[in-house]
Length: 352
Figure 1 (tube, rainbow, N blue to C red):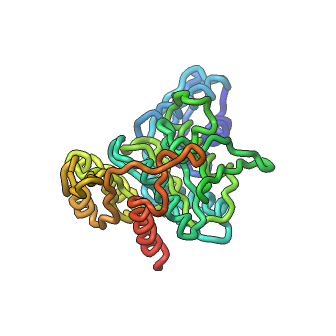
Figure 2: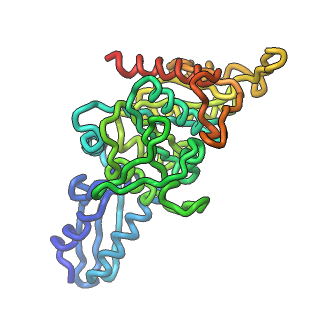
Figure 3: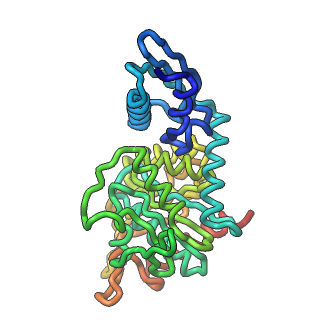
């Protein structure tokens, strides 16, 4: 027969899947009662976010642990932790990550987000990281698009990270330190994971990687407003955000959801990047607005931020010796636009 004290000890060891902290630290075990005649355990558990796969997975863990230790049946109720408690735990997580990555310097975290796939978010992430490095900044890039990881391929990275002591050394290319899920799965193998496992992997990208001293860490988020994006917002409440869209009104409308999520979680939006703004003919110099006009400006206005760059359709130049199919050279038209965008980002993040 389990006692109340034994139940609390068992359950407090389990993590809240959203803030990735033990329930003992979050005060998540709210109520425990035991009906001895039926050997039935009832609990009320407070968690950071109600509903979804995270709550279901935690529920299954609790039931499994209690039944393994002698309970016949388990009754569970969940409630959401209050905002004050959530801010406290988010702050702890952020402080821990910041201490691990940059104990002496204040690293700037910038998340690159979009409302939908196919708008060039990863291309923007890669080239902004390279542009910041070209301007003398120490830059890390986290490929946080766990399901659709593409950064190593886009940057022409073929090697794997090395292990230094008990930590991972990120791969460096174009002066940017890179970590990606692509390094840890077999080539082109799909990742079939649920929310908590994805959140744990993102956390490992910060805590188990030897980043060294950095000025910026850019995070290429998955498109939309799903579990991974929410995990990043929770882990890094001080991170700033850039929203990528195309000029098409529908793309801008969908991208507004990602922007709204950033604002809802109190993240500062640095600006909007409009990709595929137009096609400019090399023969005539005329501009064709293939995907329409005005989407980026409209989105920036809705999010009360600025349009920090408009990128035309153009192919990078690369050779077999320096293969990097998505990185624009410094003297390329888009390479210059990315440098201008990087300068604006530096001014906005380092002016205070």
